[in-house]
Image (cartoon, rainbow, N blue to C red; front, side, top):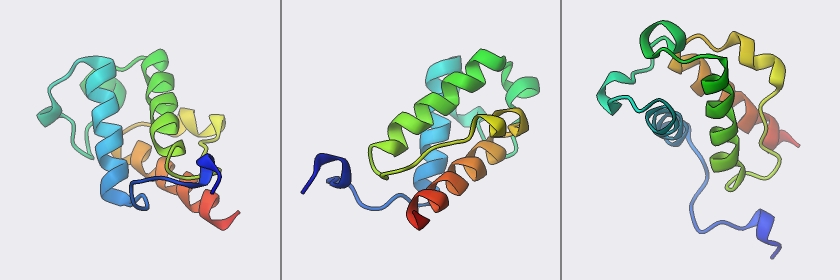
Length: 101
């Protein structure tokens, strides 16, 4: 089986995506994990600048791309990311697109 289609971990679900987004934000911004909820605003609450948002998306793509062939996030979606929930929903949409192709 080709390496890009095989993973020892199971399929990615919503809880996995939320965990990946939270872990990436904690690593990139050095914030307390307890402060990162779905309603946390990226720029206002976490002081994430545009570079941090780009790093977040790249980290999510890297992590989830290992588990889902064809996973990607459109660059146009970056400007729409206001909250952690937006980032999770954007990643879930990317997963849905990957599964349909």
